[in-house]
Length: 337
Image 1 (cartoon, rainbow, N blue to C red):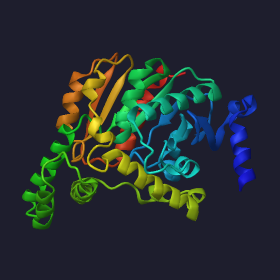
Image 2: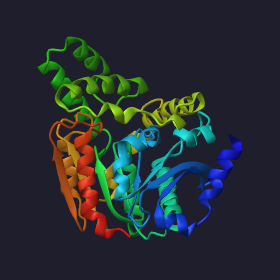
Image 3: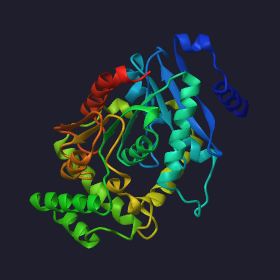
């Protein structure tokens, strides 16, 4: 197994023109800002534009499901998945201690370094950036810092700022619970109180209620999406995924409400962008509500921008969300090279 990983990693350092002319299917660890981070690259025609998909969470990589969820995109685009610092395979390779702190700025710099690696590896000047939920924040920071690296940023489930977004989430949840006369959920939500929360468990309690309500009014994702690649189904890979998920969640919410989430304010980042910005929003999204996302979108200045509101879509991805992303990818395809 060790020799196998070393061989994969070595392949990333080679510019094999014959492989690039046909297709590409690579996965391995790449040195990124002092640690080895896991990257997969797949596409049926490597002359195609490159799409860097940023996962959410922040500890929920797409890599175990990349073939089933994003496989259809590989005919038209080269699709890159990256296990971020503290997540998935990257977490397993670089086990952090409880005292190791994640920051938005550190993750932004990692994302920029990943992008520069891909430019060299694939011979492309600009990539298309796709992100959602947590990575809506990460993607905006990357796009703001280095706009010349990207043809566009396509964001879904836009997180805007703390505690405004959390309060809108809580209010929407409590309203829905009262409309449904869901006394059990009303009691749980009222016990949590209005955000900001200092108990890291509170967000998880509210999130589980949210998923129950969104499932009532949205179309589910295809069940085959979650058929994990066998490569990621070994006991170690599963343990690393779960370990990274737990670590990153605590880093995000903090032990006393003082994690990365508490510092997010997209307005302070600045609302003028030098590349096209597109926001896709589920009409039934209770976590990042449409009204908060729309106000932020209206404040954005960009060469191109669009706000796409999708019926029967919540915060978590489904086929309608993937279709909307792909439609925008085709729209910005001429801007990437």
